[in-house]
Amino acid sequence: MATAAFEEIAETFELLEDWEERYRHVIELGKAFPPLDEAVKVPATKVEGCASQVWILPRIEGDGPEARFDFEGESDAMIVRGLIAVLHALYAGQTVREVLKTDALAELGRLGLDDHLSAQRSNGLRAMIGRIRTLATETVG
Image 1 (cartoon, rainbow, N blue to C red):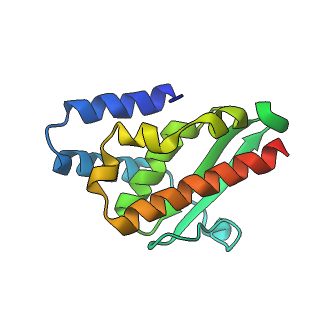
Image 2 (cartoon, one colour):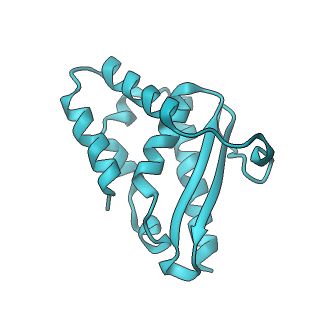
C-alpha cells in the first residue's frame, strides 16, 4: 500500500544502474529532507535501537483510525537521513489504519535495501518502522 511519493522512489531506483547510484540517491533524499528543530531532539522523539542518532516527531491530524499520519525526522548519519526520507515517502499522508496495514519491509524490499544495508543499518531501519507503527497504534487507541 505505497504512496505515490514512494512509487516515484521505486521507479527512480529501477532506472539507476547499480547500488552505488541508488545509495547516492538515498543520501540525496536525506539531504533534501528538512532538518528537525533542535528543541524537539529529546528522549521522547529519539528512536532506540539505531546505531546512529535518530529522532522521529509525529504529525498526526485527527483522531482514531482515519487520522492522517505524517512525521518529521532526522539523523546524524546521511544514509539514515535518506532512509527517513524514504520512510516518509512510504507513510506520509496515509491514515493511521493504512500505516498499520503497510508491509514496510516488503515495500522497502522492492528497492533492494535489505540486500545492501549493513546489519546495523537494517536493525535501525526496523527500529524506525517499529517506532512509526507504535505512533500509529497509539493514535488508533
